[in-house]
Image 1 (tube, helix red, strand yellow):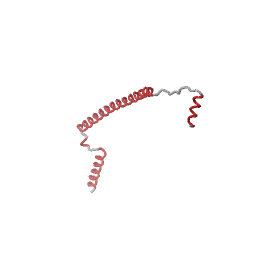
Image 2 (cartoon, helix red, strand yellow; image 1 turned 135 degrees about the vertical axis):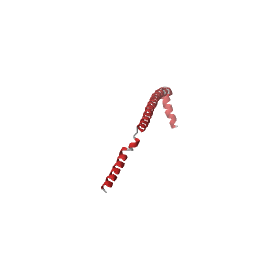
Image 3 (tube, one colour; image 1 turned 120 degrees about the horizontal axis):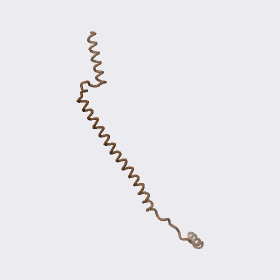
Image 4 (cartoon, helix red, strand yellow; image 1 turned 90 degrees about the vertical axis):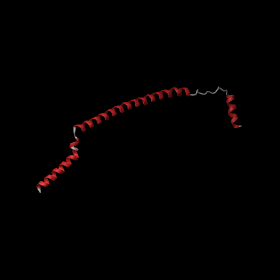
Length: 102
């Protein structure tokens, strides 16, 4: 009875250890090598994505600067000249005001 209890305890311990540590049989050099290769590939992908992101960020920044520069020059070109009224005498102004009441 005691021997069976020890065997069951050993089996339970083995199952728990397997659960937390993973399968000991899969930790072979080939599996480790495959994981290392996969990780290396992922790291290379991350480096490539970071490079592409930097290029996009630079394009956005330069586009904003270009847009700002263009808006300043085009705004200056689009600006209408200030309208000025011709000088009038007080009689002309009085005549104009008088015409509103008629």
